[in-house]
Image (cartoon, rainbow, N blue to C red; front, side):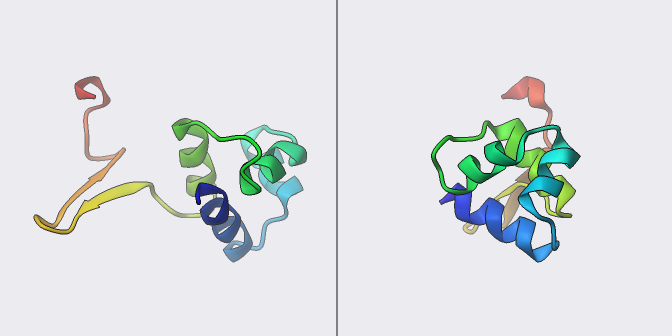
Length: 78
């Protein structure tokens, strides 16, 4: 599923796989493999791609309306 999300974000920002790869320092083929889920990106890579596309990675608790992002948590607590 993450591959579809990454592909959708990239397409919504009108970037080719080649352009995205250059922005985050990976080969076009690597971006393609992430999108087809041949290989799985780590969290840091997902965050890089999201940031390049103008998105943030967040987790939303629908019961409490609490939202966690990399901006509002202290990574040392994880």
